[in-house]
Image 1 (cartoon, rainbow, N blue to C red):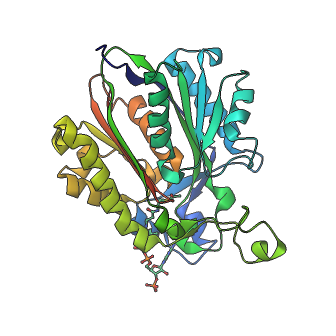
Image 2: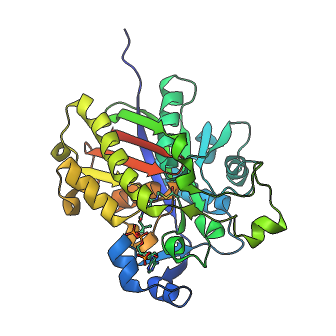
Length: 329
Ligand code: ACO
């Protein structure tokens, strides 16, 4: 039997809006303190997109950055997947907007709505299309403008989120690539993290606006416990069949929701969080799907990822959804 195609990441990119919103800025907006935010979450500051900057505007910058790193031109791409819960609009999709902004036509382009797990889902989807031989070079972008769905009067959520975009180009590789992956969801716990209004269940009305139902509602405390367990289980599910222990992983690139979640995950995996877990939550907060995409890009840029390294990506988010994969760089 012919050996299955190996699929790897051949380029990464990112874009972060210029405007920095610090914890001290938030102290002036809601009843919170820099100290509370740092000790409870690990976040010091986050980026906020400009008013006229939509998800696709950030996506196109991250995508161009990834294409440059992959040494490809937009016309070399034959599949676009965008992970976002803050699309430019319901339709056309942000992926179609991105395709247009990249100046290419005809190739398939679609969004996936998987909240914070979106980038890992996107990578696994792209891997399947390339493995099957249907497409050659896939562009996966995670772009989020969470500031547009944040309730800036709710201190329990507004201190957590930020805006940004990350991207990866996937293609067939000779060695390494994605070694194993897992995806999952539990719709029964969807109400723990949601944006209630604006969809067909609760269309926009004066009442939904007055009741602030177009912003993220979150049961942070309950989610926290689910996140630790689910991320640890997903990590085990992808590493064990490969015979990998925590120490065999060179670096963990997790979704960056909360520093304490990541410390707890490292503890469960029996690894030193300071050595093994890549963090950028301090600078950017939780950018939903874009968090792990930007983290991967920065880990590469900083030389934290070298050829042959084994990387664990592990994400968890609203839905509930989760996804993890091991990739040999
Ligand atoms: N400043 C000061 N006090 C605050 C703030 C704030 N910004 N926010 C909440 N508090 C208060 C609360 O009112 C509460 O006060 P009380 O005890 O008088 O009632 C107290 O702090 C403790 O609140 P908790 O919610 O229990 O705080 P916790 O330690 O759980 O931290 C947090 C909250 C940071 C949200 C945490 O629960 C968390 O990170 N959860 C996980 C979030 C997550 O994983 N989300 C999924 C991914 S996101 C996505 O998919 C888009």
